[in-house]
Length: 395
View 1 (cartoon, helix red, strand yellow):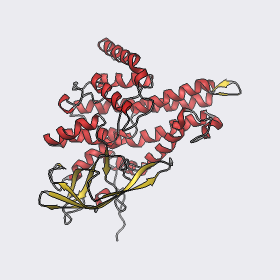
View 2 (cartoon, helix red, strand yellow):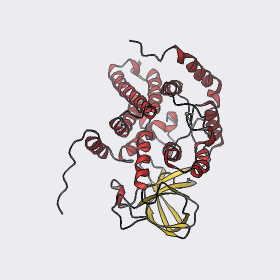
View 3 (cartoon, helix red, strand yellow):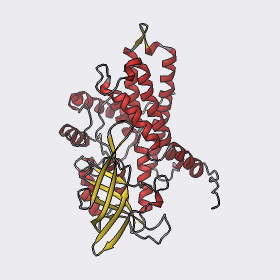
View 4 (tube, one colour):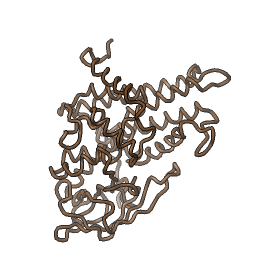
């Protein structure tokens, strides 16, 4: 069985390999939102079509036609070479595709280019203390006062709010409407008067999350995406992109290649871990799951071109399977390193700048965040498999 993409794509694969060989020494070792190296690398990737490939040139992208095979080849070659794939985050991975679908011409012109080039960093104002898994219960309100929305309320678990330039935020604009209605989707700057940010430390020990408080925050009325009171439609589109972006299969393959490198060098009693049948068995199982997620991703990419495909279930499984897969990949790397795998922070024996330990804890958090695995299983069973909903207890 020939699973190759055919001769017509060999030339393109060589182009990608040539780019990697020419520029691999110029990639930043770490992705920093504000770093000059990261911004220069992002610009280089976009110019060559290896980031924001199908975003129109008028909005700062490369402007290529959608081609799932070329997208797959780029992902494969970057993963094999363990290349930096550029900037991501909530603005690039979540807001940009929704603006392309639902934003006004002015919003596309204003926000997309600076976002994909890393010049405008976004955070997401969704969860509240009383509205997490049941997001539609949110109470942060926005009232129209002339040409401005006046916002009051609170958000929580707001990733990157302390470094973000802007926020896309769900607010209640019609308090008398049913909870899934009367919600609107607003865009505004984080330096707007009336916004207070308080840090929350996550299980990695870092300041990634925040509480955000809004007191009479005034936002121009035209900075609404979609129609007033129909923000739930926009929110669901965003959530679909979020769950697909939290643990992309390309990144899983890159990390697996890193584990293989570790297993080629780490030893037990003089035996390389790659030759140990127990560890090799764990590796092969993870490779199989990563391959399954890769082909599922190709199915989703194909559906964006062929609109008649039903990939509802294929999209739902991404967040559940991918975050758990990444957690297990990082865990295998820690086990491969033995006692050294327990080192952390400034330990002199730390490998890979501590990325394995950090990512292990980070993806344990993502199994909870963005919709817990339990929530995802309920969604898959009810919406994907048409199973009956859990009965509600009568009050």
